[in-house]
Image (cartoon, rainbow, N blue to C red; front, side):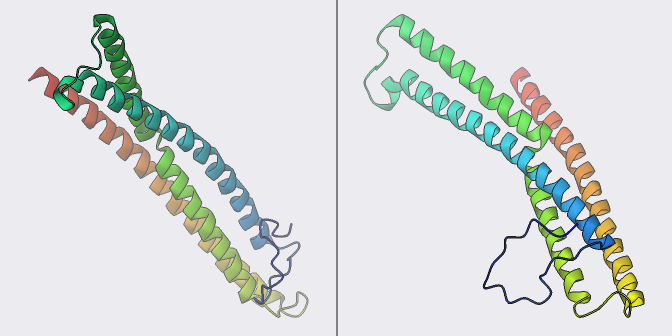
Length: 194
């Protein structure tokens, strides 16, 4: 399997940018690049949805608060009717809850962190693939088999070290997000009791 994710650039003068077929290291790196590309796309979509909910609810909260407190802010009571003030207060409450829930969802699910971490991992994998390509530049299989095998082992150990570090970072982020969300919510609830 050759590297297929790269965009062909006619002005690319880098050495050894041709496809490499039937290479264990390149095949493994390609597999992980494909996996992390899927993850980046998945978390990016979830992050965008969450950001839209947050933005819309924040705008509604600010507009509703501005309308409710218009006598104090502008000197004119925009909401002269009793039912209108109740409806705007209801919008303020609902939008405030949506804002709070979208914050918690992003915090607990870690969409932004996961998107960023997976994007960084994909970039590191692309650099790793490039490093390997340059290390075997000018080498041919029958004559340089031992050198290529050593480079494959070297790059595969780097690959699995990167994957291991990423899994540990993911675990630390997940646990940290749950602890932060727990402390945030219960700190807020304790503040209400005072």
